Image (tube, rainbow, N blue to C red; front, side, top):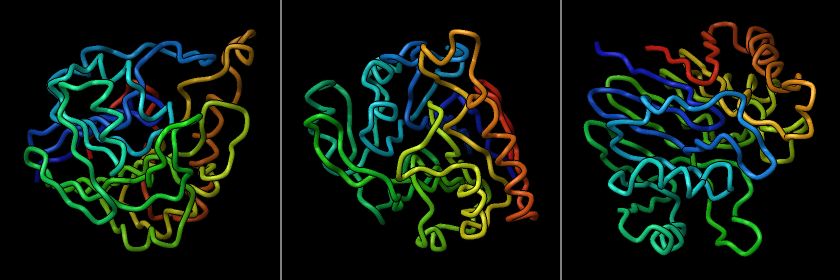
Length: 250
């Protein structure tokens, strides 16, 4: 059976290549984003031949308009219902498809199901408030992209899946509500029952002031902590840690 090629571009940006279709999630591709610095540049070669973009929610580190422009307006965007008007105003030539929890669409050879997420809605300071989403991509494999979320009981209805792309941290030394740290991400494995879990949303950005003496410890430590916590919480799940720019076939 053909496998899925998963590339961790960085932060919540992944590329899921499966059955001849390539999807990119929450593209954040800039070396500098406001006060944040990227640990390593994006390899532009990974950004070609994309069939669609999946946007999980409207926060600036997940819906980044300059990064969308870098991909080109010919790549359609799938986004939570209520976000389309803003996107069309800013990028009127782009095809935008809005979805809600429970909607399933076909992208190339793949079926994509929009699922729930437990995260804050809205785009500050005055943007629309829309329901954050995760996505389950199904072809020869099933891949769950969690977007940004805390653990919630409804994860039981999402799994089991072949691959879970799980956020485990962020870009700073602490996390606010609506996020998973390594311990909570490990707990989600018992609900999702993936065969393989790949941590995302870590190791990519940090504030400029925190990196005056090199990349801070919170850039690297969350992945190691997730491996430890997952071994205790769900020892049957294979954990594959990818640094930004690395890929694996599942």
